[in-house]
Amino acid sequence: MRSGLVRGEGDLREVMSFARPRRVGVLGVGIDCVDFALTLDLIDAWVVQRRSAAALGMALPCRQLCTVNPEFIVDAQRDAVFAAVLGRAALCVPDGVGVLWAARRGGVTLHERVTGSDGIYRICARAAARGWRVYFLGAAPGIAECTAQALQARYPGLAVAGAYAGSPAAAEWPEIERRLAESDPDILFVAYGHPKQDLWIDARLAQVPTAVAIGVGGAFDFVAGVTPRAPRWMRRLGIEWLHRLVTQPWRWRRMLKLPVFVGMVLLDRQKMKKFISTVRSVF
Ligand code: UDP
Image (cartoon, helix red, strand yellow):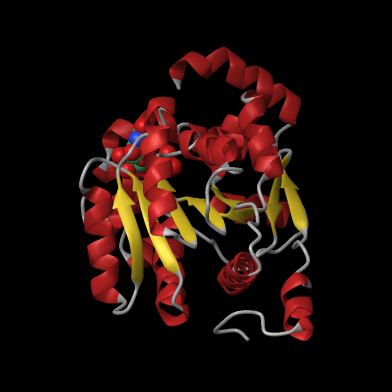
């Protein structure tokens, strides 16, 4: 069953039995207690469910996956709409060593970071093995196409449904909708950066014809080679942020959110909220 469609009631029960994972709250944002293996299994189940439903003439709604890092959590403190989107998402995976650290302080051990930048490779590897169709939406013009080519070269047999920069602007939706409808993807990667991509997915969830839509931030830029990724040893040490600061110094304002996040976790949350509102002009 794992490699194909639901064939009988037993298979369907197995697929539907994927309970929602436990969530741990980090400064009011729910993070699902998942690792890569469980994340891939959930995506697998959603794709099987959608294809099975489609074979019966039914359309299942798309699920939203958010890759939550400390920046998301700081932004959610002062953006109620973004916080609500994270709360509604089918899966909020722990992207960022700071999220793992904060969860551990709350008594929950999360085993690994589940990042969009690694996830795009792992999901495409699984997609190539299973025959899922993937669509790449976002980033600067031409980057989505380069991303698709790079991943197809790495995972022969990867079924690329399409690649398009588009834009989160409302005027772009008809074109994106037409392209998605024509290409019948199972998985949609959206690279408009947070919170734009996550708000966009939430707003279009009922219309997006895929099993899952995943906000992956700057992952296309990494895969296409536009932005250098931190070396593995830096990622292992949890200092990928330092590499980003050195290679993309214009990010420094945004990166001030990291110490703010640490402060919020260590100190009283309400006091830090006040602190943030006094320095919000900096961000
Ligand atoms: N981007 C885009 N359209 C927009 C805003 C951003 O395609 O209107 C792309 C941008 O080209 C880049 C990605 O979104 O590829 C944002 O990457 P970043 O690393 O800043 O993502 P974040 O860390 O904010 O999630």
